[in-house]
Amino acid sequence: MPSDLEEQEVKNCGGNVFEGIPVGKSEPSLLGEFLATHDLAQHSRRAFTNDIKKFARWFHASNGEPFTVGRATTSDIADFRNHLRRDRGQAVATVNRNLVMVRRFFGWLAEHGHVAANPAKPIKELKRTTLAPKGLDSSQVRKLLREIEVRGDVRANAIFSLLLYTGCRVGDLVALELSDLTIGERSGSVVFRHGKGNKQRVCPLPVAARKAVAVYLKIRPPVPSERVFIGERGSLTDRGFRALCDKYSAITGIKLHPHLLRHTMAHRYLEVNPDDLVGLSSLLGHESLNTTARYVKKTEGQLAEATDRLNY
Image (cartoon, rainbow, N blue to C red; front, side, top):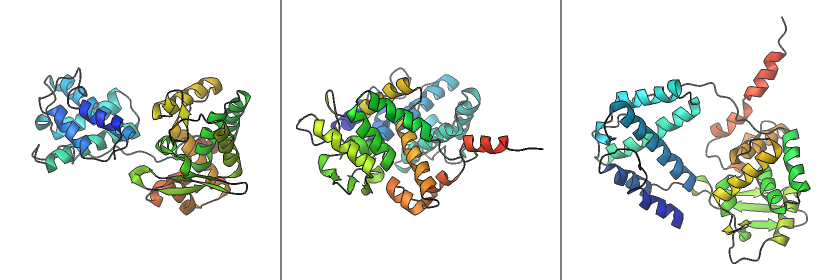
């Protein structure tokens, strides 16, 4: 069930989402209808909306006319893709994500008879060399946890420990409730009930994570909310967690973001459990082993180190 914030975002799509961008009369309501009929997480909803806005803004600037779904052509989609890569220098992954979002939106429009055909369907995504997602190395993790300890930031220690030992997503973290935690002296676990695709999974908690969470629970503010992590104005939100990342990015000099910590856990897990993709996939909540297998690949830094060892 969508949250009040998500429902408000859907309502806002009726008038505000294309603010400042000339569009046809029906375009805001079409995007609002698409969002209302798809079960998207709040972060995914925001990303999707921003990508469609980006295309609408480019369409108006390039064609000199308001963005109207019925006027978008296959050439427009191809030119938009090339503009993002060639003119704006955006990463291949970012360009491909934009293309996928636009294709998905127009696919829905075609399916419901709002356009004759999906103009984005023939446009291929850019090819790229697949590398493993980058994570933090051990010295960076130690620096982060040490700065947290020096400041006596009990809540941050619990939050970052959960991320580093379970690889959970930020959505898992903010939705976590007290009843989802089982913490004993010799064992512990956490249930993530609202994972991607509304899938539930159980992750064991190693001793370091159990201790960090247990210490936080002792000083957790006595508020009515069942959410585990509490901020200054109530339950910790996605924005509140990202602010915490920004805070420790400034302190450590390491650019932190939620998925970086997820990647860090995945790399470290495979270091100590070589080739256990099935176990890692279960912990991360991946639907396919192909998604997990990307962590077996080399990172850009590892490839650089390997080529540095070349000698002729």
